Image (cartoon, rainbow, N blue to C red; front, side, top):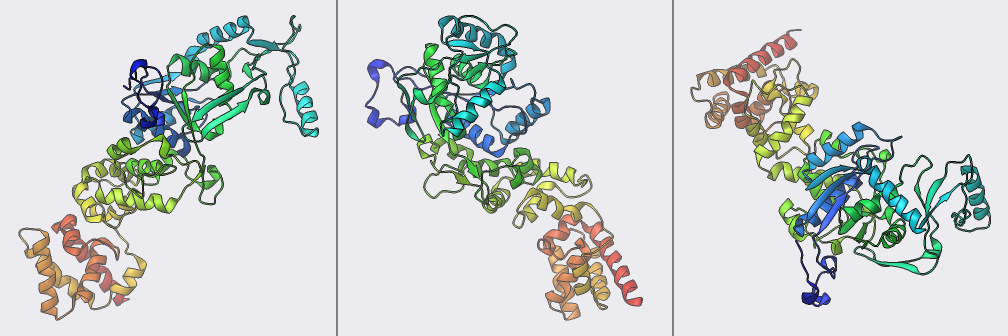
Length: 493
């Protein structure tokens, strides 16, 4: 909690601007997605920034589901948002709060604004409004409602009206955006926006104001596509006698091609990144650097993010999504994270690929062996398959290059040594391979590669002593015998 009593307010030049407020305040941020689709990467970044700010200031993070658009609403979208937040570990202190549970409250506010004369019924048809806009565009004017119904004293029979907020005509709205700085908009540029549809349902600009007011949101951190709504919302708050929250509008995210991030750029759903093999910590680390920086540091733990994050550090310019950098960060976390943590996420991918891990080595041991090469969990899961499953085919190129006519004798000699091992461990396995090279007067390059293909079916694996130790003695001997028979048959044909 951040407390500044009026008699104790410090010199504001010594206080970070995003922490200053001339009244007692507990920081309260919110993330308010609309459940009309999945949790996309831009929304996830907004949620992260809001969550981090609440964490840093010992405040509260509220999750609000803005589900008043019932035509586009789906329960699957709600589930996807909650799943994405849970996967990322962005736990909320309050919520989820659903706007559809608050319709009575919105009706109350709409009635209040009507009674105060700060709202009015509008009977203009869609066709009439479109004709107005076309005329304004033709005259090179900004399309806006002309206030035709603002002074009506009698209802228009047979027409279900909308309700418009009576925006002030004089003066301007000035607010200090923590990312963009001071913003001023003349009220003359704002028209009377609709706050209730003809069917009585409230619109976004009304519900968001009432919710932020009732939930005592202190800081609104959101995408800069909302900045045009901010002056209108501040005017509604003023009319209701409420303090406006502090705003921070973060810039948009661009795709690799420099265009605004969208579905055409591929995986923009948070859960798609899980499906593609990324660790949630890697996604969070990448997102926090997507528009915010702390010197040249690239890798941040959750603790470091919380300690170092500031809204002043958020860039004003749009950020470009760089998939290669995300892959690099993900590879770092696969290598550096505790294997037990990686194993929890890898198990999901093993299940997705149909790999049964009940008959084989510990997943943590496999991760230790493979993590230096893996960029994603999908790669890690695929590379681990031969530790748990036998195979009928060999990599075509490796087969052609390594399985020569003399190889069965080499594999047979190796198997004699492997069968004699009583304590199956990397040291003893390495000794058998070395002894075989010496006995056959061959260099390791003639023994190791065909052994690797015979044991794993591929030309790539960790060091042979570690690989064979994880595969196990019985399975190794069986695979070498199978390879011997296969090569002998191949050259007998």
